[in-house]
Image (cartoon, rainbow, N blue to C red; front, top):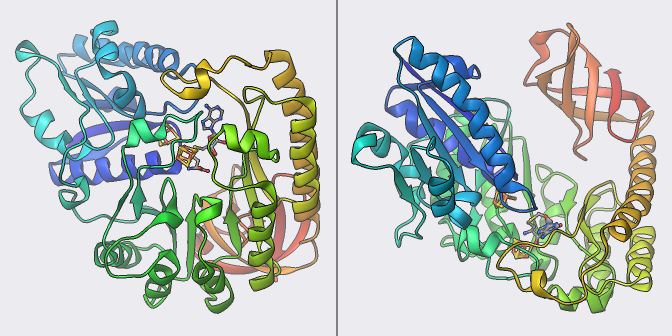
Length: 437
Ligand code: SAH
Ligand code: SF4
Ligand code: F3S
């Protein structure tokens, strides 16, 4: 069997895409390998969200080329393929700057990988596909298989929100929702091959508006009927598009995990407006309160950007105040990174790098304390943990609580891919330790 090596950068959607490319290549006789020396295809699935994306890519290509050269000496051919959001943003540039890349595919064209690999001939020309085809790639992808007890499932892709800092609407294209029937079939395929938990993915997952269900909440209600599917999660949600039905689903469905990733980005209404986020800080807090009313124990997480153009100390202070009121279970926070082609990148009042660094440190310190507090509050509790990975040490497994806390436990491999009741004995800011209850 031929082999493909895939390295993935960026968000969970990219991880999902990599899995689907693996599925597509499998049908054509390729197996995935994590050893690049053995690979007939070396694939980099790239992310463009923050700076240095292309620099990172070119240094990765250089590294992979060493494997290609080594294989050449053994008389073996190797293709270098680049996919993902960097290709969509600057595919021409990639082919121009690096003669090492054979095939470059944007996120809406990756289903064509097998066909392009089969017909590839370097003499005839290297390949770049970065358009937005009228038909959906999902209609061309083969059946999927779960590779662990948790699986990703893309239900929605693309974005029409155009936040002024963000490249995603340009790299992923406009919003597209898959029909409920396709999603349910894919979920059944995943469960039949071992998935117990499914994470529904979308750039704005709660903007899902496909055929066959009235909203994401309704879609989740339908998915919850699948026997053998124990846990459902979804990410990433856009605050102002949350429906009451989705909130209620957290009260009604035991399978829907008590966790909501709801990025606020900033706590200042002035900055939110400049970002083109369509909510106020108060509106955001009200949505969080509605989730907590429906499901009091729900874990809330968020993304933050500090140092957006025009952010003053007072604006940043407003972010800190919202954080102190909301109290997060976990979070991701970034320094604002100007992206080529976005409106914010040419705004006049850019914030100095050292100011961004200082604000990020202050925010992360607070967020870490909150994360520690959330984790510490679970010590002594008995929680169901889905054990999905082997630990670093022999005889150790790692899994996730309903609140998505990584949890370590000493148990033999026979417990892998099972939901086990654990008594939580220890908590750090980033993980828990438990024993079988
Ligand atoms: N659709 C999601 C976010 C997708 S991008 C949403 O709207 O919430 C993931 C995160 O990357 C964003 O939430 C934001 O916090 C961060 N991000 C996006 N563009 C960025 C930029 N130019 N600089 C810094 N962080 C950025
Ligand atoms: Fe980017 Fe905004 Fe769309 Fe999220 S909602 S993907 S941050 S443009
Ligand atoms: Fe990156 Fe594209 Fe995801 S830019 S964050 S891989 S949508």
